Length: 110
Image 1: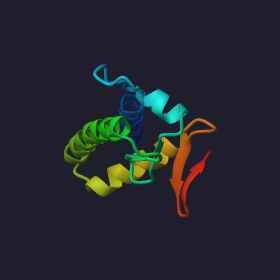
Image 2 (image 1 turned 135 degrees about the vertical axis):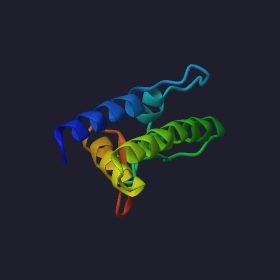
Image 3 (image 1 turned 90 degrees about the vertical axis):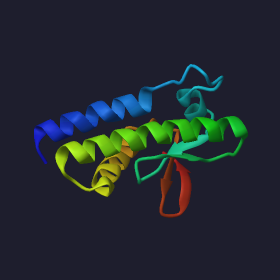
């Protein structure tokens, strides 16, 4: 992996993890802090505790991530799954203590 690729993924990760959509009463950070959502190994956000608001937020975040991953895969001529997997690894590594991540046995606090 090149330094340019890693830098782009780091920027993408910051965008995906730090974004807050102003239309939602619940921010991504709030949802993570409350244990409602967590990071999955496939690079997407998952719902830990279901509610309509949480599902809407999760769908919005995942749609934006998917588009960003597709753009990166296209620009670098790589498979989408490679981008998703790398993003998932980075998201889980950067997850704060006490927030949820999905592991082989299901959801767990980091």
